Length: 73
Image (cartoon, rainbow, N blue to C red; front, side):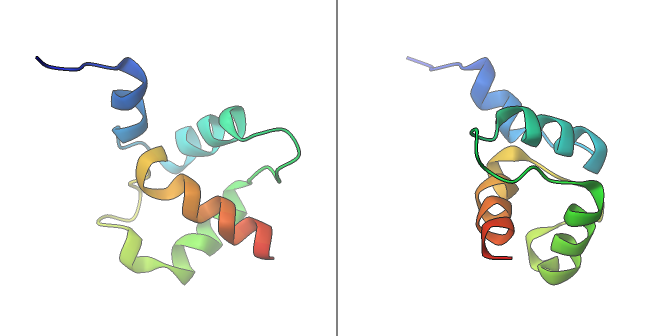
């Protein structure tokens, strides 16, 4: 039996920085810091190993790490 979830597919989808920041800010819990494009570029420079290509972002791969990083700063 194959389990299909549109939400899972959306979270694994690779997007641009602009799309990622919009989706991230829409889905982050109330009270958490919202991200800006500048935040994402700084995060990307600090953690280049998380990126296969410069403009490849995914909720599944980057959201939790970004949340932790934003909360620590």
